[in-house]
Length: 143
Image 1 (spheres, one colour):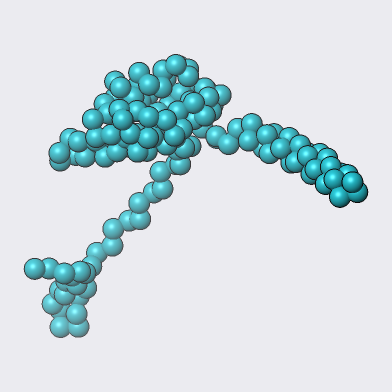
Image 2 (cartoon, helix red, strand yellow):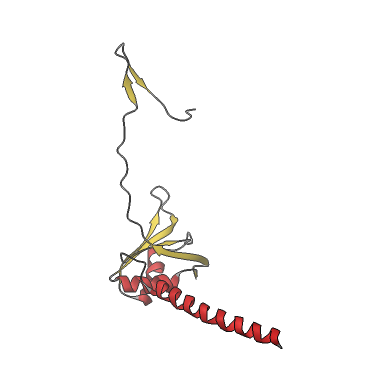
C-alpha cells in the first residue's frame, strides 16, 4: 500500500511540474518568432507555380507577394519560394498552418525568411610580376 501511495505522490508532483513547464513552453511558443512578414518555403515540387503557391497561402491572410524561385537557364523551379504577407500576425498564422503540410504531393517547410547577405566584392586574380608580365592565377581545375 505504501508503494502505491508513493507512486501517486510522485505522479502528482510530476504532473504539477510538467504543467508549469508546459505553460512556460506554450508562452514561448506563442510569442512571435518572426521579425518580418516574409516567409521562406522549402521542399516545393518542381511543378509548383506562383499561382498554386498563392492559392495555398491565401487562406491565412492578405498576400503581398508569392514567388517561386526558378533557374535562370532552364526556367524550372529550384524547389523553394518566398511568401510575403501584409502583417507579421498573418505570416505567423501561415507558418503554423502550412509547415510540414503537403503541397502538390510534397511536404513543404515554412520558416522565417532571413535577410540577404551582401556578396563580397570580386578581387582581381591577376598580379604584375617584377618583369612587368601579368600573371593570372587560376583557382581550381581547368581542363
